[in-house]
Amino acid sequence: MFALETHVALSVLIPLIGAIGIAITSSVPNIRETVTLVTSVLLCLNVFSILPGIMNGAEPTFLLVEILPDIALTLKVEPLGMTFAAVASSLWIINSIYSIGYMRGNNEPRQTGFYVCFAIALSATMGIAFSSNLLTLFVFYEVLTLSTYPLVTHKQNADARKGGRIYLGILIGTSIGLFLPAIIWTWTLAGTVDFVKGGILSGHTSAGVTGVLLFLYMYGIGKAALMPIHRWLPAAMVAPTPVSALLHAVAVVKAGVFSVLKVVIYIFGIDFLTETGAAEWLTWVAAYTLIAASVVALTKDNLKARLAYSTISQLAYVVLGASMATSMAVAGGALQIVMHAFGKITLFFCAGAIYTAVHKTEISDMRGLGRQMPITFIAFLIGSLSIIGLPPLGGSWSKFYLMLGAAESDEIYLMIVLLVSSLLNIAYLLPIVARGFFYPPLGQSNEPVAVGYEKSDFSWQNIKEAPLFCVLPPVLTALACMVLFFLADPIIRLIEPILTP
Image 1 (tube, rainbow, N blue to C red):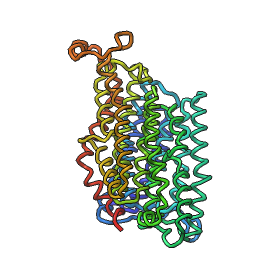
Image 2: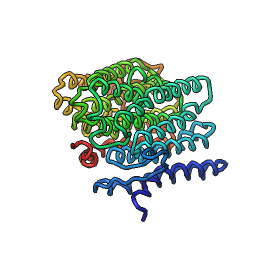
Image 3: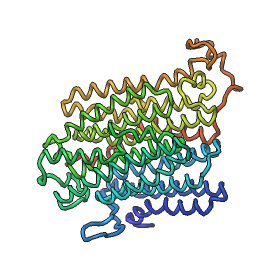
Image 4: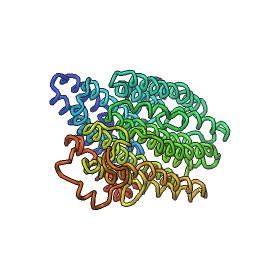
């Protein structure tokens, strides 16, 4: 039985060892993919072995390397990081299963490099989740960017290279140009960059300086995709669907909004931001991003592009929760990381299954597909309802806590923004399902079919679902969306220590 500190180190080490194993077994695909699955399972088991200790108040710490006195790369597990690591490690298992079905089903090239980079990205994600200070967070944040770049450019065509340039340019540019200066400035003001409950800046800076510093962090953490530095996310949609799932649900964007929450809670402090009012501008930016991205999503006919702008909008919920700086709102933001991860990965899995089965990417071409792919479209419906925030699905809890946070702040306009956003979510997600089930295939009448016609038109011989490994994962994550409705209380109890002074 290892000590908790050893398990913390293993969380970063296991995916790296797995990456080496994947590279060594590259010539035998079955063994290579077995190594991928075993590595993902071992990581998940290792992460969850830390959970009981965290629930009992432990904060295991592991020193990676001391650079200078009082400046070190150190891992430390706290409730918010534990939550993020648990989500990412769980979804890696399901995404690994899906990747096997998708990569084989579409005869994708360079599969070994794909799995190796994926494993390195998960190692970086664990480092981000368990970072004990800003320096550690920054280093693993950059490793995540660099390790996912080959995944974005996987197809190696002109579109992939262009998307990769935008992806790398924006994320590296914002982190070097804004995030790193913010870290250095924080060091000069507070004399430390450690994550401390209640923050480290109170008494060291004025309201004006706090607002500027907050700006540097919020836009320096480009993975949070706040407008107007969101373009990297739609540009990255040229990647294979398992990569899109990694970007939107497992690691990348979640690393962004997780970092936003961590900086707000442990560097600025919720109470300090409330006292100074320095986050008021961020509330407006998050609200604008939330609505504007949803409106843009309505205009997109490409399914992955629509889901990309949906993600930009949904990420803004987390930033909005952080900017309101109340315990309820921050709880809603933390829950949104969990609930959106399972809902959005379901939608991307379904998009990939549709492409694998019938090679369709445009929503306008998906008429009648629900009757050919009923399992996929039912999973898409469940994921959509969770994203919208309807009970009994997990996504309803994050929206509920954010609404409570807006009420706690006496911000009526934010309650209206949240309501309008949910209506927009309905407008850009549910017509996809309706088109699949209630419209006839292309070449027939444009009118919705009658119920009787729908039943008579159905035939088991017409079923054209994707391979099992592309269908099983969205079914599992759709079921998880339902199960999470009943697990909101344990998650809140896990993160409760960060919400109380």
